[in-house]
Amino acid sequence: MNATSKNSFTPIIKLGITLALYAVAACAILAIVNYITLPIITANKKHDSDSAMKRIFNTATSFEEITDFDTDNNSINNLYLAKEDGKTIGAVVQVTGATYDKARIILGVSKDLTIKKMEFLELSDSPGFGLKASDSQYKGKNGKTFYDQFTSLPATSKLVIGQDIDAITGATITTQGVTALVKKGCALLTSILGSEN
Amino acid sequence: MSNKLVIFTNGFIKNNPLLVLNIGLCSALGVTSSVFNGFGMGFSMMFVLLMSEIVISLFRKFIPSAVRLPIFIIIIAAFTTIVQLLLQAFLPSLFKALGVFLPLIVVNCIIMGRVESFASKNTVINSVLDALGMGLGYTIVLVLISLIREVLGGGTILSGTPFCLTLLPESYRIGLFNSAPGGFLVFGFLAAVVQNIKKEKDS
Image (cartoon, rainbow over all chains, first blue to last red; front, top):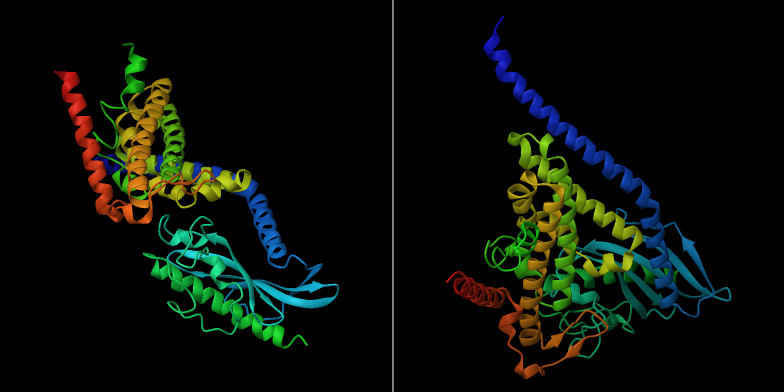
């Protein structure tokens, strides 16, 4: 019997098993916490986007969901027509994508193809830099918050940074990323509203 | 001074994690551009530090030395994620306010440092005191640094809260303090002050 090799293996196996046990225990607890919190978090997110939708189109009496469109790899979702007394007054959609880290925005375009409003649902960029984009206390050169700059611009606008949109100092990538998300949402909403006659 | 009080006050000046032990500096320089951020990071980190020290102190006899670091990381990362999920579900407004700081806590060297050098070798009660002392020492320094950086660099105080006040007009603000070099300068100055206090105490 080869006693030496058996002795050099056993401690390593014991250590490996101990480590594995801790990992399994941690994962099990995480799975339980996730299981408990996931429905609540999903409900919170839905509540946030529903209230954002109602803020953007505050005169709307109902929202009709549209599911038949190109979700671009699931980065565009929750497309709704805003209706006031049965007549379409605009459309709203959520766009998710890369900024410096990433962002999820909700964008509303009116029937006359101008941007109604844009709001951030999630933004995980750096505080003090890219995060200023969603900060209601940050006012750019034109006295508006970053996200309010988009209001009333035509939905077909090229949204040129430096011309139509003021960039945030020290947060160029965030500015470009968010503007790209708005453009993407506008492109979809313009085509939806255009065919909604 | 009783032993318990020594442990608790250890993290304030004598072994302040940032200014004396010089650990956890990345977060200290990265999030101190405003006082609100400083508070937020300080308290979130203190909470994770507290929970990690408690758990590791509880299990200290069952953690083999050879694999202790991976086990510490597993526990700290698991706690950070649990805190994130719980906040996101039950206190969403606080979760949004803390934002990116929560995941950053995992890489905070102070937690790893204290768990390795203290919690793994001491009782649960002493570990609680150590965690609270270190956490408070960390938070106080963070708030001090952000106070200087926010007022001189941003001209505001408590920006990010409804109590934001603008103290300096734009032309009097010193932009240097908003960026990393400015943060280093403030940090170095505070470290020098603490070294001076310690020297006078020892003499």
